Length: 433
Ligand SMILES: Nc1nc2c(ncn2[C@@H]2O[C@H](COP(=O)(O)OP(=O)(O)OP(=O)(O)O)[C@@H](O)[C@H]2O)c(=O)[nH]1
Ligand SMILES: [Mg+2]
Image 1 (cartoon, rainbow, N blue to C red):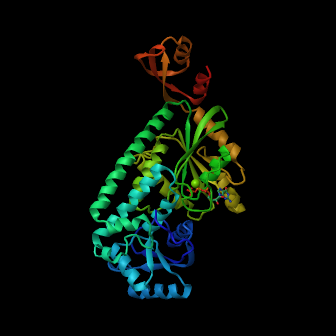
Image 2: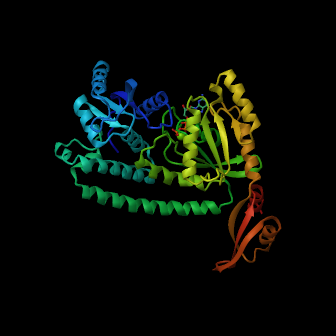
Image 3: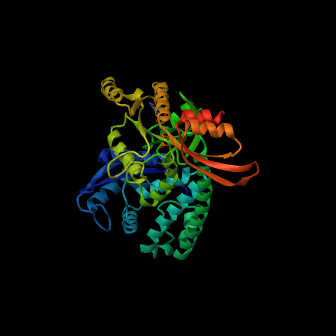
């Protein structure tokens, strides 16, 4: 998408606006913002939190603060300022004028990362759509900017610039086309999913905050080589592989995009589509970085997203899909914390502690996943030739048949469709009949 100035020296500024009700404390947010900047190769020259009592509509910060930012830029030879918050187009432009430097806000930064990481056709379409949406919102209020070629997207060039030169109508047209393309891609994916839903294998989804260790665990369990790095949003596109589990011959493990607090609205839709996969899972493993001081706040964020996806009922908190908490990065905990948390993990059926990096605790984790899946019956559909007496008799004997219907005549004569409730073990047995 944009051309990121990799290696650009930047000042990261985290506004702490009074009364905003942030999910994370200012220091954790600052650290996260640094992580985001690092994720696209920006060099963080310095970073600090700035308390904001009253938001200045034209500048966000007070003018004294802006002057301090300017001085800090000079001292640190920073050519870019990252503001970890949402800037209005006017605020962004005024700050750029006053600081004589490029300024990028949190949305711009996250869009950049997504633009760089999206690998699948769908991911790329979603990110471009989000990008255009963001640009469009800038265009509306800084129209005169166009003549100055300032570009609505901060310091980023690339295809964005040609969009800026175009008029709003062109952006709208492009967005319309992208939506159509997306719909097409989604339809295809929907078909894939339907096929998978009917497949007899249970699906286990790894979800969690960005950098929690999902891909590391995924790689350990599948032998895959999904990118797992100390980077925010290392994974954007969901990946799936088959694994074997105690008592479950075969299950599908899926790795997903990480969550982050205050996700820009433009990206919520993109996330949602990717996470639809999660709603089709039989078990959700919520991977948590227990060594992170914000671990609890991160958990709240993740649960909020799961609530949005209707995986957890927002009314009574019941889970539509069972959730197993994976307390990861155990190797990083000091002895005292490990002991304290270890006790809690032991006492709960819904928690396992492990280190995806060292592998400690992983066999116990698999054991538990196997147990949950085998104790859990799922509804599947099978289409069988009416002449297949053996398998039909087996279904009647072992399964809980919810529906049985006659289908149109197939190549092998009349067919019947069975909607059956089976546990994964029975599914495996049925498959090997
Ligand atoms: N010490 C330690 N590091 C871990 C462990 N698990 C993962 N990591 C490290 O944490 C970093 C992030 O791991 P990933 O597996 O990429 O995390 P992720 O959840 O997939 O992150 P996103 O794809 O960005 O959402 C990497 O540097 C891993 O090596 C662990 O158990 N112990
Ligand atoms: Mg990952």
